[in-house]
Length: 530
Image 1 (cartoon, helix red, strand yellow):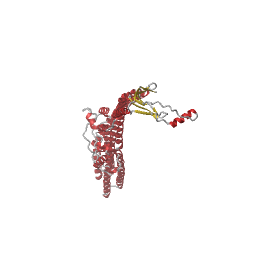
Image 2: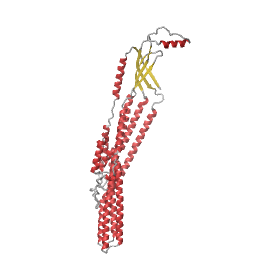
Image 3: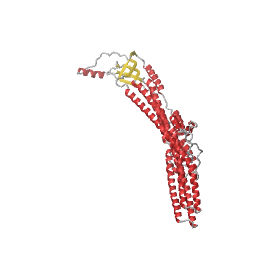
Image 4: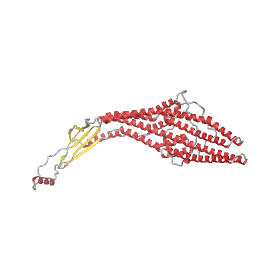
């Protein structure tokens, strides 16, 4: 329900030029208030800073230039990928990262829109006198002034939403970078397993040659030759499977990196040594997560946005209060330039017979302008916006609950991630320092005993299989340690360097040790295996 209240005064012969000048001045002032530009540059800098804090890898500044992106990606691929270069390629080339940047720009546009006044309303009415003459002209210009107290709350809500979008986008970009590093370590694990299979194939070939030489010398049997040949063929089958796994996991890496090239063309530089997490404990991870986790910060921003939304809805009990100015020019009938034909027809119709128009001269009419302020507002009789205020309050409660749920999940995630990383780190040490050296020595002794005729080939085969299984286990333990470290970064919401720097000294739970060296026989694999 609306009530239109007009206060008017009458003024005779108001000059139209003055009215035009006033309208032009009003339009210019409103336009100067409404002018705004959308500049997402500072938001992108903030986004890059958040990604850098999360994964120690800033969002590249060339992400908006397609030519620069292609050149940088080609440069990184040509140099060979390690974990850091893989994450940089993902941040440069993954379309989902570009989609997040577009969402940030859209949210910035919403903030700009929230700070603008709505356009003024203009109405124009023309009414013609039945006898001809100057038309009646009425013009109204009105502006909603309720936005004077609505805009601050509306803009606050939009800015909170923008902050949430920036945090969500940074979290997605950081997750993409971590996914690229995980895919890289899986691909390098497959590459190392292929190298192990190739080494083992060579060992089984040498073992087969030894068995053949012993038979020629009269000390061996056909059974030993068949066992050695079967092991050689089985190892060749494992090598084929390892080559297929290399292609599959490189394709998975290329998918995360947003590449369309042949997976075999990706050159990997193996940096297999897992990071040392001994200075970290679970409590340090929990504290870091509470400070750095982007989903937690996004949930807090969502709570703040919901609170701002409540305040905004409270200002909307009166949605519109329009003030403006109204001007009306009175109509003026014809004077000397009477339409005698129309008047004669009208007189004939009135008399019912042929008649002439009246010869009485008409009164000369004077043109008047009526101008004055207008006020139109909404009567809050049926809708006081209580429903929307209640909705906003319930959304605030939901946001609080989501924040609390994430907080509780983070605590358990931190404990699990820490324990997994500690166990993976311990397993790599166990393989490198105890198990692999022992089994390497056992294989050497078994081969020497077989060549000397002191043991059967079965002992050599058992030692060879055991060593192969342990080498594969060591490679997978290294991969598990790398992936556990990446998961630790994801849970903590910051890089390992930041996590170690913030961990209290002397408060670590994991045992300290020297850096892990490659196990005997587990040499670094080639940079590019087909």
